[in-house]
Image (cartoon, rainbow, N blue to C red; front, side):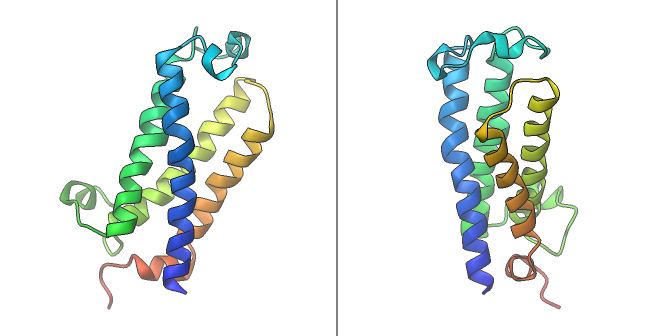
Length: 151
């Protein structure tokens, strides 16, 4: 059971990486949003004039960082810097950061709703994705699999 829940967590984060990296890159490459069919009017209530800052956040924070987390979840390799800033010392850093990442994703979607960037099915899907990541990372089997100190 431990491996099944870790596979589910890996799949959830992989889905996010696969969707965020190209979308973020598209917004960085074309901050007008036209490439993705996003009208600039969506940003009327947002603190941005174009999609460059959201694209950077999407590419780096919601794309490349989860890619690093994915690497840690799959390999369970120790990266000293990340383990050093891990507040749950008895768990692998990738488990901790997957939990944090789920929370960041939920906040990101809620900020879009706060700034009235519209609501569509993608907001629901990615909110649920964040909730599923948080939930799956806290399943007892997942926590046990990524526990580093087995006392």
